[in-house]
Length: 512
Picture 1 (cartoon, helix red, strand yellow):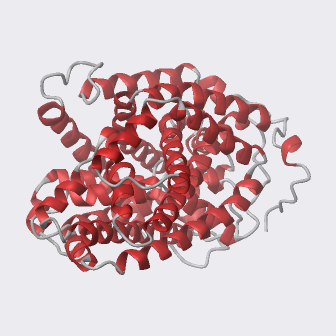
Picture 2 (cartoon, rainbow, N blue to C red):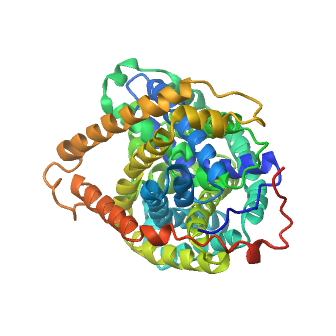
């Protein structure tokens, strides 16, 4: 493998904003409000929020701490960091973590192109007056060449940013993330000004504790929190390779997890306030919830079909629509950049020149993302397969830490001399016992649900988009490819500093 990269984030703020760029994405704004509505009870969705926060503490933050520690220790991508921690014999398992995140990148780029299209549409055309017009816009978009062209455009822009290395990524995120937060704050005040918005907030935060008896609530809460925070994607691990020694891992992990979940709550307040405030004069709460729970084609839900027509019914809705889709586009781009960087970093660690690796990854991303851009059923299948795959990634990260030794990991890689806080033994208990139990229990429950509810008649058919077998087959192919190319992934090329030609002159500092 190549020598560890000497590039570093220039400031602690640059690192936190870049990592928030990973975490804050369409999962916060596009997915979280719909999932909260779907898992709400008759009285409210507060119990789901409780389960979601539990998994922030029992899944996301502990795994983010592990990723920070692994990345800063190995100073490489997912494969190199696994090798540095547990050796070449088992280090190839990091390739599966990288594969899952890259597979998500293929269709995530398509979502980013949808966000960009609706931003342009909200600027250039009138908002739809009713559901028929909103559907016509969506169907016209999907029936055109725009999804494919947009997919190519966003992959190209993302690749251009990644091309220059971590300095470019840091600079872009210093603009994107504060801009996104500003857009969300403006949108929040606008949403709260709507008459009837209080009904939405009341429903969002009122707990219906009886819903916690349903195992599906806990499954959805964990999956959503993994989507929210970026935990176990390998993305935070990749950015951690550029951490300075003086950056405290524990504090950074809590800042990442809590900061991200606050953005999700703000997004949910905006959506619930907007929907209830707009529809409450004409609909009852039950009907409004049905609107929120309707996912639309490929889980587009409120974002691409309902939100534009809701904006059309309010004063200043045109401006609000532009701000909303601007924020959504920023969120999508910041996350997409981190996914491209993850894949590029793996190739760079193998000895490839960054420029060539970036071009190859972006071309591959466009090619493998084409089916999702052209077919919403294929898109939904990929979201289903690789979204659940994040639980396996979490299990592998936990396994790597356990194999290395949880106490040794905590004492040597987290609680360093430069730390400003000390990570307690509670983290070891969660990584060693709680995370594995969560994975086994929830994966088992998910397979049961998939075979009995999602695809009861076709669970054994790998061509059925929501079957157990389609997941097993695709995961098997991924593991097979990673195993087959394991020697190349862990190729020794210690004599070359492959980042040198690309990062020279970037002005990035060394270790501080």
